[in-house]
Image (cartoon, rainbow, N blue to C red; front, side):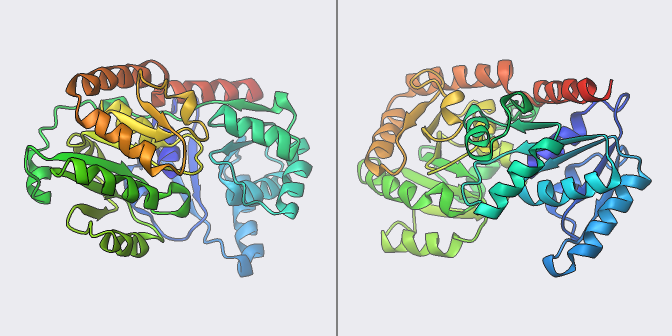
Length: 353
């Protein structure tokens, strides 16, 4: 979600729109370094639940001082507090961006969403799956929610990376197959299933390794699980990295084992990099992946099915080239950050003209 916000902020037409980026935290995160600071104003709200009146008042002051015409929130917390502040500050246009299913919402949170639907001008869902959930669960009027899929900067991922220094860093033999995934190490990703699948794969294809790129609450648990499976020498946890395009260039296949998803940017980035992908058929993923043409789909929770597809791809170089080519064309034609931004700008103009 945060990467998408950064890319949107950098791509939006500054001859028509000025951008103020309000961060809920008081701390500068690593992604802020990628925002064009010369063209963007920043505000750090330092939200803490026990100090919410002060943080809310600060946001209201920012909205008034900057004479904000459009408040565009991303995620539940910013959508909750942002819409309250926008109503008090009388911001003309309120937009929320729905990046996930948010099935964790309690009754009072769903009630809040239903109540503020009347004050929200438009909601943007990153997949049809999420749009349907917002209509069914939160009674969002269908005309008040549109689907605009995430986009990626294709230019960052189709560079000529040799990958040699990455392989040297990881001490990976050029003949080794690299199975990789990128994402937060959280329960929704079901990475234990991916380790189970890799255990099956490694018994058949011993020159294979599994790379986890990303950090999160389950890192220690997953490391222990790899040890339990006697896979610790073949499973690597690289932590958070800023060189994702270079890392993707050495992947032989990208695998996503999630139980639930919105429309994962990591999947789109892998496809933009021309990496053959295997993913679970959850959330908005089947809206992107045409099984057998630009990637493979498997049911969630099935290590056996996941392992079968991984081995099928690793053993067939022609299939990998075919999937890779079609995956790249899919992103180039439908999921670039430029196209996503143009669709959002069209909404901005619709409500301000």
